[in-house]
Image (cartoon, rainbow, N blue to C red):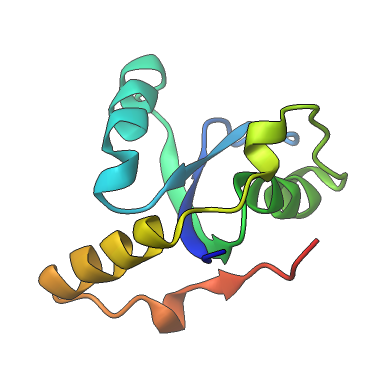
Length: 109
């Protein structure tokens, strides 16, 4: 199981913001493009590392909405493949970026 870095995109700055958690780096390119087309005003708010998309979404729901993320989607709870984390590290290195100080690590749920 690998910790993967997720980008948190806020789609609405109202009292109950809507958000998306997308994989950072090239693994999230398609999702970012779709988000930018459907919601051009969406903004990258922060990044975090999590073991699963569910953990990332749960952390964001708690932080932004004050409640737990609820989902029956088992795919969200699946551990992230090691190769995704390796690809992200390589991509950040090629970009000359050092992500470690920028991320908050989500505790295992």
